[in-house]
Image (cartoon, rainbow, N blue to C red):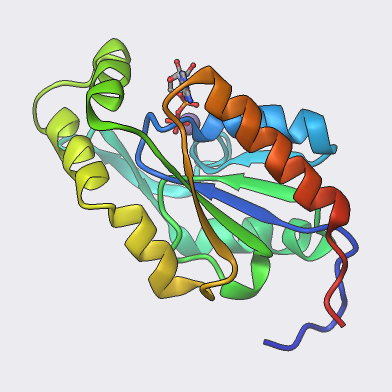
Length: 176
Ligand code: ADP
Ligand code: MN
């Protein structure tokens, strides 16, 4: 899609099932590559970009239009890492890379249990990972060469992923 003004630094979306390490990876990458880390969950809370609390799902009902309006200027500027467990409502043109983190089921189960997830919330998220929902969603919404799936089972994986992505950022050039 044509852009009015070229950004000088790339934007990256880090997505994946809750617990796969989006926030851990995003904040380390933000440090390593001098990018701005925007956690959509935090932003939604801070700026009340939601339509109330969903008691069943135990989360805010995110208002996607408000979130996109809030971020438009920043994204146009470039150099942003967006951290969210979804990717289908952002404008495709925002992102130069869409990273889908993936975690082995038993490891993810332990992480989510530790976080206090149980019942339907726990099993929904494990199923989400088993069926690779986020990877499918990413492939449906972004060009094939923009989407990359990365394993996030161990701390070594985080370090390697951050290094790989930081190198990619360093070598990125605005598309003409
Ligand atoms: P998300 O933002 O995707 O929900 P977090 O980054 O908050 O995930 O990580 C959830 C928990 O799992 C944290 O305690 C974090 O330290 C741990 N964790 C995340 N990724 C890894 C990994 N690749 N190896 C080991 N621990 C991890
Ligand atoms: Mn997170």
